[in-house]
Structure formats: structure tokens, C-alpha cells
Image 1 (tube, rainbow, N blue to C red):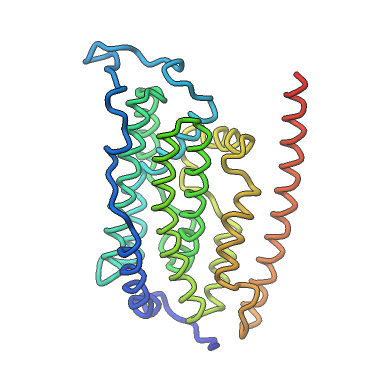
Image 2 (image 1 turned 120 degrees about the horizontal axis):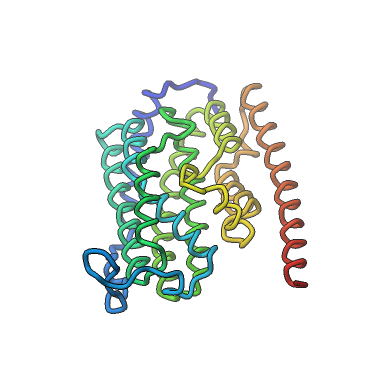
Length: 312
């Protein structure tokens, strides 16, 4: 394995053929679906305001507060699509296979927010006024990742982030105890998984081209990882609620998101790294071990909290 250091321009050009192959594979696997098929329109009714219907009440839907918080976080995360499109279009460009992927990905992601919002409003799961105000505030701030403009870091980030979103959607759907909502979020999660596979496979090819630079990029992303919804109003409180409920917690982040992707890339088996690459890999291993300890401590605290609540 060579130790050549590639420029970002050269990597984009060299990976273009891989992108073309992965895009074709994606298109062969992605199934057409329609948001309207998942929404029980006949259950909807007018809200107050111009339609002079019924004001929203938390009692309108048999939904726990944490399930409502998780739905809001997941939807608002999807809403910032214009910023995400700008990020990847700026890095990947709009030419050749890269551009074809950028537009296809954006179209598929756009469907998620449409379907979730329609479902949540028809079923009156959330306060429509508060939701719209959250959306305006969140989108007005935009989104810029910690790795904006960096190809390898961005590819590593979305490899993990798409998988994290899949886990969050699937678990949120189950937590709503609403069969059709669970079905919708499982459908969205399937899209997110295909997106993860696309980016994950690109990073695998990048490791073959420039293992040292790619290893450093992965280390940087794993250490700094934050979900794209971090800027949502009240996100930290909602994230804690979701973690305590087991919708998305540190253990899931480590064992179901980071670890399987790192294993797919064979990061701890790759040979021929330079001293710098080896240092990055050693630091990555240490970080993952520490994350394991942190996750165990959180689980212990959560178990203690649940036991205390059970006792009343």
C-alpha cells in the first residue's frame, strides 16, 4: 500500500469512477415510495386560526413527551436540507457522477421531511405553531459541519451520521407505539441506510488510495462527532431525554454506529501506514476504548435512575 498523499482535487477526480459505480448500485437498490401512502388523511381535522378548527392539545395524540421530543428532533434535523445540500455540493461539486449523486441524495432526503411533517400534523402529534417556530429558528441559523470544505472528513462524517440517523428514526418509530408511524420511520431509515452504504464504500476506496490521510480524517470526525440537529432549540435537553429512553444513547452511538463502520473499513487491520497514520490509529483505538467506558457509566446511571423511579 502506497504512502502517496493526495490533494483534495486529485481525490475527487480519482474517486469519480467509484462514485459512478456506487450511484448505479444505489439506484438499483433504492425503491420508489410515496409520502402520501403513509399518511392517514381521513384522520385529520382543521386547526384553529384561518380554518376555525380545533386548537392543538397534547391530549390529541396518545404520545409520550419523549416520543414527541424525538419526532421533533428528527423532523427538524431533516428540515435543514438546504444547508446540507450546500455543504455537499460545495465539496463534491455538481459535475460528473458527484453532481448526479448530490441531486439524487437531496431529492431522497427531501421526501423524509415531507412525509414526517404530514404525518405528525394529520395525527396532531405536535403543536403546529411551536413546530413552525422551531423550524424557522433552526433553519435561519443554517448548518455548517466542523469539517466544512474537507472531502475526507466530510465523507467520514456522513458515513457515521447517516447510520446514526437510521438508528434514531427506527427507535423513534418504535417508541411512538403508533404502527403506521413506525412503518413510515422504518421506510425513512431504509433510505438512510442506503445513503450510509454509499458514503461508507467511498471511504473504503479512499483508504486504499491514501490510508494515512484517511485515517487522520476518521480520527478527527470520531472525536468531534455531533449530530446535525445540534442547533435545534432545546436540543441538549431533548438529546438527554432520548438517551435516557434508549432512543439514541452513547452505547448505541459506539456499538451500532461507530464500531460497525470502522470494522468495515478494517481500520485496525490496515497495513503499510506511516508513523503518522499509526499514531492516528492508536489514538482512535484509545478513544473507542474510553467511549466504551463512558457508555457503561451512563448505562449504570440510567439503570439506577429507572430503579429509583420504579420504587416511586
